[in-house]
Image 1 (cartoon, rainbow, N blue to C red):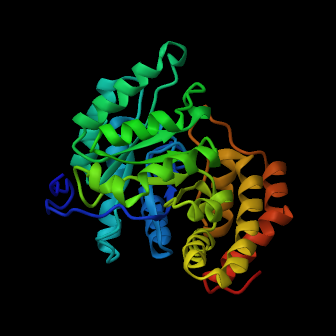
Image 2 (image 1 turned 90 degrees about the horizontal axis):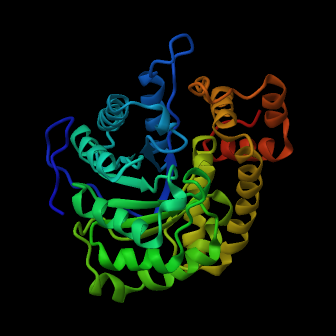
Length: 345
């Protein structure tokens, strides 16, 4: 795919999709009105990018289902402007565009491109999950990939799509068939599935036999949880898109760095395994509290975060304190502060 025109600054700029850690950025709301808090959002995007964590806007963690089209576009353009202003013009922006119908999903892909996104990530709608056969799901992703002006990442998240769980054969077949697909995020947590997909798409022969429409957007296999970054790297996975990176960006980025280093130098593996344990325990504990818990931790750590948009309930004060006091969280926070150069508190 040729360089697209950035909808914010009007400059043609093809940014690369590369292995690493990506964070689905929470959407922050003003407490009294539930309007977008774009200042907090912009600051958080830059904070993470400086820790080598790239942003995904309007995803599940970003409460995309609670956002209007205009709000999605505003978040994308805000992220792009913030990154450019911070001297980070090469950091790409991924935008969530999956919604109820194929037609609207394609529409959102075009709107994301106009707002300044570089890639989109698309989930299958779960509203009519029982009626969506394997052929219907294949047709959905094929049509979206063909009509999207931006490269498309498949988002496999059964918990948010009515239980739809794409298997490794279908994902691999889609990767082979659709040159505008540039990856998959596996929030099914299935390491075996990740291994099987990587066994095909991570081979050099795959890129030669099935070149991408955009040469800067190879097909990446990304985990959806932080607890198997080391194992996925050793089967030629490409990193992860993880909510935990909002809380501990330096720790998550360092874990991926150590994982890659360990493949070339096994003496680094014990260090990677130790950090993987810290991150995995923290991820397991924090994930139980979902978006509200993550936002509360971000508030405690960075001074912004706030509440989810209704009807999603906030975390209770008791549960929030218990999460903050949990030994797995305290251990993760200590490591994050150490890696970010702060004095542990």
